Length: 467
Image (cartoon, rainbow, N blue to C red; front, side):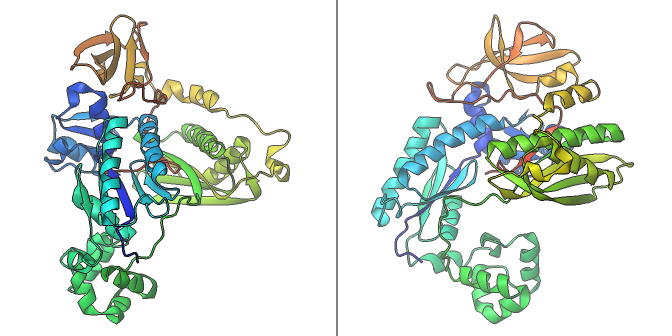
């Protein structure tokens, strides 16, 4: 392990909710909850004002509404968050060539590799300047942890929240970790934590006192040796700039169970096309097609088919996913569908596949969406809470809610005072979807006006819950 605190961990503060508050002046200082708004939605993140009521990430949205009925509930705008994330990651890459993103709002940085810091004083200066730069560029806050290892840097950033900086001095690690819960250590989740608790081990120091042999007996060799080393504050994991993507997948959770077999097939085709679009966007192809089906009773089935070589042809992926679906019983109803591709490569071998005679097909997402539109989407559901809109007379605003043929819009921008609320017919020709405005004047923001019918969850190359 290093002798200087030159590993930095950045964690943006309540990232999604903070971005929404910065974008919408009327929500600043108020409880904001971002996530799926349907009956099966979950909380992606909650503002600190909402956390006072006990709301937290990964909580069912129905429970969050009971705890904080007066909070603002918004659908995620992932393209908007990605654009801000790229600004933040750009600041990190100025510091070092070794930046390891963990999600849109979190990353490790090896300051030593970039000669940005070499001792405690220089590391503290870098951390302070980074926080100031993030605020200047994005208008948001992030918490910084500095330590001699990745594990301790992450612990330090947790202690720094919100909007702070904590540096763990080399030599103090054991004293710091000792009284902490075993759950603070990487790899100790609820199940492992309960297993250790039943053995009378609840703190990090108690792991050390139990001894390595006992920990190995309880958890097995691989997990036991690693956990005991971390309890001693030993963590030699390097900051890795590029981590190989093992799979690309997309999935949708439906507000109402799908019983129509034709609709299920069309949804699988649509997901296959979305998956291929993400695959191509990453410059990858894959040879194993995976179908995920969660049924009405929460049972989850995963089926896969390995092709003779890698492909990024949507026709091949659609056909393979369709074949996998034929072997799954969906008569009781389906609540979630997913399509993924693994066994990734950076080349394709379409000529190997009898399934795809001729040239690779273009994506057909629009045609599939038109086929299911009549059943699954109404005009007013296009106006999802939190989405940006523009009115010919009143200018830029965002959707507060919609229903019964009406849509309510609050007209304001990141740099304005809290705006007025107006209500329109959902088919009002003067009202249209809009791209989000930058939080800081002149900052880049990508389009986020992607229409949707369901609560979306896109797994890698993507996002997750954040804090």
